[in-house]
Structures are given as structure tokens and as C-alpha cells.
Length: 460
Image (cartoon, rainbow, N blue to C red; front, side):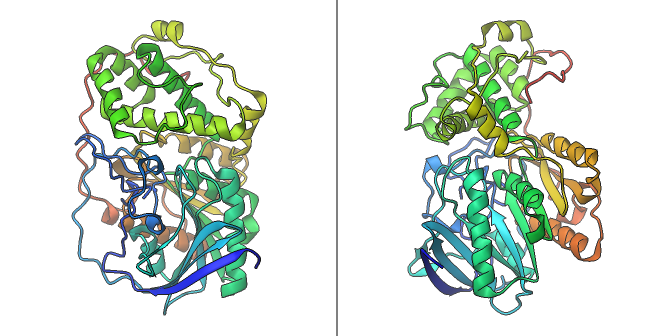
């Protein structure tokens, strides 16, 4: 294949099979956020994901994202030895990729893995001449006999357009080098969950099913408009704390701790205004809100650069459901979107619900970055098109974006394969008790003034 560079190595994973990646998920490196976080919110990765091992030892702050999690992680039980794997790291047309194949018990199945939002393209690399072990999340898949292939994408940020093409090219490369898999499944975290949906809707012939973890299961423009609406609402009550949304400097980082601390201090100093913005964003704490506001500021600029204009428009939005809707609507600044930029966001991507393969999704009950309620959109979309029997939504009682453990990921993957192989449809709802941690200690919500009943008009 043209423009291909590879390095192959035998990699025997350690007892935990983990190179430190983290998404609060299983803790999307972007991910095991090396941020110093308050006890109220730990920041991890909205890539939420699994195999950040192939990157630098510590991803720069700009490559990490918020993942607010407050549930205690269950005490680790002694884990069985991880299945040893053969690892190939290389490039296809300049795009980094990693392939892991179980050394002895490969069942000739393949999982194409989509990682989540990261500031820059992921680069898989060697450490002391050897690949890092697979992440704990992806080791769960390898332990079940499946090979895993993942692209680093040719673009960072909201990389839906390029990630879809890069992953398809890698899938074809895998088939030519290792032989056609007996079955291929798609799997992804956060933005990668949306890519999993896109894959099953647009290329169903190449896949047997998919698993979306903490995924964006609603139209991208809908989700991003919500993030934008909340950010400019913050500006209305806290002017000058963050850069204007149309003048975000290129040096702005995704998880800049000093900036997050500054935003939290501003919120703490004006408790009534902070309560209003928290009620609008459905976020429990000032620290959690600060994390998300800073992360979304980076995303807003990323999307302006990618689309060549402003994809955000809040002129027709009536803010409702807060403690002071009148003041908010009066003070908030209005922005007009550019048609081509708005169309780009809609194209990459608006899920249609036209499933032809089985899709299992799982989410945490409290996710400040990608609210679990977005899954309701996709459920309704599939049922409207008569494809509701191909979609199942499950959840875990945990707080945080992608705060789904490695063991829970293995459990839900087993449910997907049982559905694909034996047509044993998973039960919607909570993941089996065996995979649940002890009852989570919820983050105490900060006191809020009495608010009127929530309204559907809320930008969420």
C-alpha cells in the first residue's frame, strides 16, 4: 500500500494491561487528565476513551479534555493476566495507526475503534523501542479474542469528516494484511460514539454491529449550539472572564488549569449568577461548570476554524428554565451563523436513525459534557424509521463524561456480541449489577435559588 510505514512488535500486556490512558471512562489519555482537580470534579477526557497509549507520556493540556467525575471508583479486584498481543504501529498516508492482535486466541474478529475529541491528531509511538501496552479499556476487547485497529486521524479537534475516512482506509488495510475478518464491529467513545453511529448508518455492509460509549447520539449542530448558548450566557453575567467567542486566541488551551481556576473564582464570587448558569447547563458544581466552559471555548474556536466561519446562531433562541430568564434574554449577546459553516456542522454529523445493524449504547446518568438525555433523540429517530429494534440504550449510575470502567466496558461488549451472535437483545436500562460499583457518592449540588419548572425551550 502506498505511503505506508509500520513497526511490528510483540507486546505482552502487564497485569493491568494499562498504559495510563484515561477518560473518566475507564480512566477518552487524552485522557487520564493530569489536571489537578478539586474533590468535586475530576477532569479526564471527553475522548473518554481507551487507547491513548500511543501518545507522548503525558499529553499536553491542549490535548486533554474535561470529564467531570465524582463517583468513587470501585476497589480494583485482582485482574487475570491480560492476553498478550502482537502490535503494529505505522502510518497510512501520513496518518498514525495502531493494530493489536491477540497472539494466540484471535477469533478472527475485528473491532474498529474511534477515539474521542482530542486537540491534535493522535500519534502512536514506541517507548524504548516497544509499543506501550493496550489501555485497560481496549485490553477488555483483546481478552475476548478480538483484534483492535484504531486510527489517530489526520485532523485534531472535531475530526468527524477525516476520522470516518481514515478509519475506513485502515479497515481496508487490515483486511489486506491480516485477512478478511469473520466479523467487524465498530466501537467509540464520545465523538467516537457519534462516528460509530455514522459508520453503521453509512457503511452497514462492512459491520456486524456497534458499541457507542458516552456518545454524541444527537445532531452535532444541536449539541454544539447548546454548548455555544451556555457559553455566551456565561458571558452575559461574567463579562471579560473568558475571551469573546469571536476573538478566541490560537493559544487558548482545552484544559488550562489557571484559566479554569479563574472561571471558578468568578463563579464563586457571584453565587446567584453562578446558580443561574448552572441551572441552564445542568451542571452541579462551579468547578464542573468551569471545566466545561473552558473546554467548550476551545471547541468553539476549533469549529470556527474548521468551517471557515461562524457555525453558531442564537438569534432565535429564547432562554428558559433559569432563575431569571428575563435578565438573561435581555443581556445575552446574539450571534448570526454563516450558512456554509452551519451546513458543515449538520453534515458532520446528523444521525438519521436509519440503522441496518445492531447498535448498543451506554452512558453515565450524569454527564456534564454530553448529557445522557441526548440518547433520547436517537431512540426516537430509530423508532420513527422502524429501526427501534436495532437500538438499545443502557446506563451506569456514575457521574462524569465517559466514566465507564474497563470492567463495565467488557460487560457491555459481551452483551453486544451475544446480541449479534445469538440475537439475544440486551435489556435496556441499568447495566447488570455485577458490573456496577458500590452506590456512588453524589457530588453535593451547590445551593440554588428556587427555579421555575424546567421548560422544553431550554437549549439542551
